[in-house]
Amino acid sequence: MILFAGIAVLALLLVPATSGASGGARVGAQTTSSSAGLQAQGRQLYLQSCAACHGPNPNGPSEYSTVPSLRDLGGAAAVDWAVRTGRMPFQSTTGEAIARSKPRFSEQEIPALSAYVGRAVGDTLIPEVDAGKGDVARGLQAYAQSCAACHGTNGAGSALGGANIAPTMLGVSPLDVAEAIKIGPGQMPPGGGLPQYTPTDTQSIQRVNDVAAYVQALNKDRFNRGGAPIGGKGPVPEGFVAWVIGLGLLILVVRWLGTRNHT
Image (cartoon, rainbow, N blue to C red; front, side, top):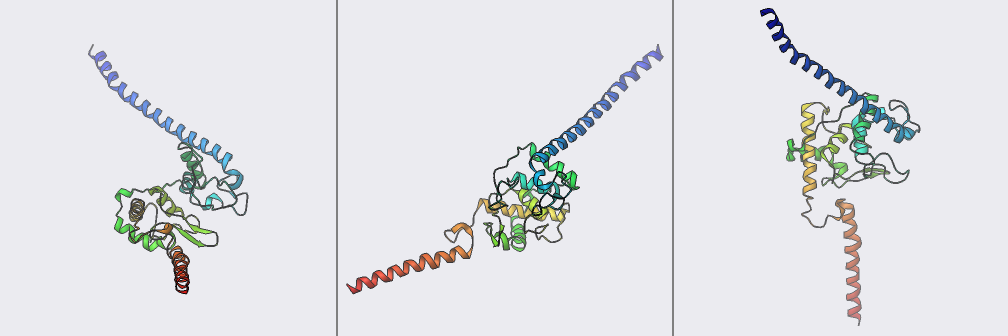
């Protein structure tokens, strides 16, 4: 009896352990299946919407000389940035290629497409960012040193010459900032000009948080204490207003006074 009682107790002790082990195996299988499903969905989306220009293999050459290969653009972060902000798929062969638009993929499709391309080119990293952990004063300093020359101190953006345009920073999310800094879209260098930037480095992540916090502050307060912002484009439109409108009004007043004195 003692022997049978011991066997029964041992069986009761082993049941939870084996149950937990099998449960863990099921979770692992589901995770693998989910990852495989995500890759399959991403591949299908890529072949339907991207392969015609970027080529059937994300890691291979593109179909056109004017279209860059995805292996050179920044991996998953580049895809997420371009697709989530509606910049890609490109809708037209004319107009501003970097203009934001409404996303044409769902919130479920974007991670799948990003994961597929990221795995294909060997860069699956989506950069970490938390504007709540950033310091606005430090962000202003970093932004002034690395970003303001093109995007403007007030974030309004500007033309850089030719077809190159620094887009506005107004209305962008912290993730937009972090991904753009990592990949360096357009004429922007990878790292965004931040010193010794590495997307996984603690100091770099903090600098990105600081810049994101400043950009977020720009969206809350447009800093137009000097009067009408005139689009926030800087001295060129302001000078246009001063010369054309201001001088034009002055000439009209002078002519009116001259006509009045003559009569």
